[in-house]
Image (cartoon, rainbow, N blue to C red):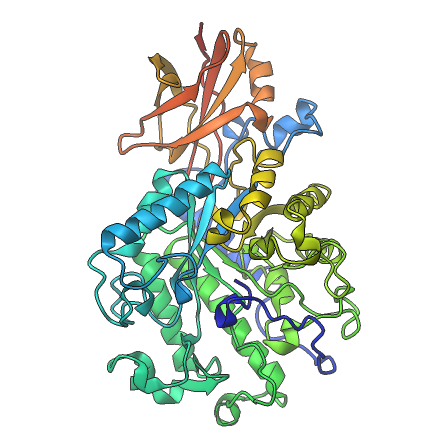
Length: 560
């Protein structure tokens, strides 16, 4: 991803020189204002629904928070909550669809294969690119159908890809994050190649060409308002779990070219004397306003950004990282650390696409830097992993490089998960590397981390019963408890007879007892096939809401 979709891969120039540091714009709300507004919205929404804004002590998750302290958690146990995701890129048909012009049936089959591979590797989320180039993977009233679907911009693919993608992800227990590129219009520089009614052709003053590509000008207020409206149509009309931006705001620098926005600066620069500060302000405004729009429409939907992995080097700013690479603050006008400090994002997902020991951008330097950046905020930190590099020369020729990254992360509790670029790599060049990751780090399922300030509440404990043996295991029927219907259930298994309830609650805090999750049906019920043990086994279930708050345990179901 990061830098990938302009030339398929991140910029190679990790030693790009940067101009002297410039004073950042200090406008906007107080630090954490985004989270405060969301917290107030969650409380109001909960009050209107007649439910608590946060789980009560009696309904709190039984294992991952209170259990660790009270039950003496095994330090060797893997994390019970962890984001494990893959990017699925559509631009240039990198991942899906694999080529333009496939039939609806072929496109559906391709996506199902990618999803099933993600599940097999222990992942629990997908970040699917649904607006790659000012176009849409759904019937949008604002923008044309994407050319990456059919090979022809504006051509109806014959089904609703976004509706299908969301439904199939949820059916497999995968969170679905819609991945949007806000400002990129086309991978070419000719407006005449766009469909005649494209907004970029109707509003040529919104657009500039740079580096052989077309972009909406981030400094034009009407363009910013339009792209937010276009993206929000998907948020409002589809059951997304998250909204995701990557690293494309202002384009990556092209040697010998200047971004042609001098006239825009003259018209809209206002109080800014320095064009770089103004550009950063424009990007900040987009991030802040998109955060506000998402949570005003659907408070439970998460908003996150995956910036380039280096904010600033310590050589240009005393609080920068001890690195010597390209700086997104100056190169793309992306003040990603500010977005974290202001809590304009629910998660930050920096693309730390370098190996441990890289001389200019060491993974072992950047991860602790980002961990410190989120410290004291409510922002979750997920690390972007360069699965596409697996098999390259140097450190990446060792298939254990990705596994080493996760081993390193285990010593940094501020890291709450990882996202891999990209899905096709997981079954091609990175297949061996991800096999090691799955065996050593993802051998047991993980629940998605809870973002407390988005509201939600743990459902009542469910009821579980065994309906009988089936091929490969035991069929368990799960029914909801009283109150709000759960989104899904988690199933745990212990060998032998049921322990006492206190011990059971402690033991499900260890994710090695978690055998899987299952989505609740329309009536709140579910059927789960649990793997059979070698002898008697005891099963428990918990219920979770869509924001992953977990109930107490069910009564046991002992199977001899």
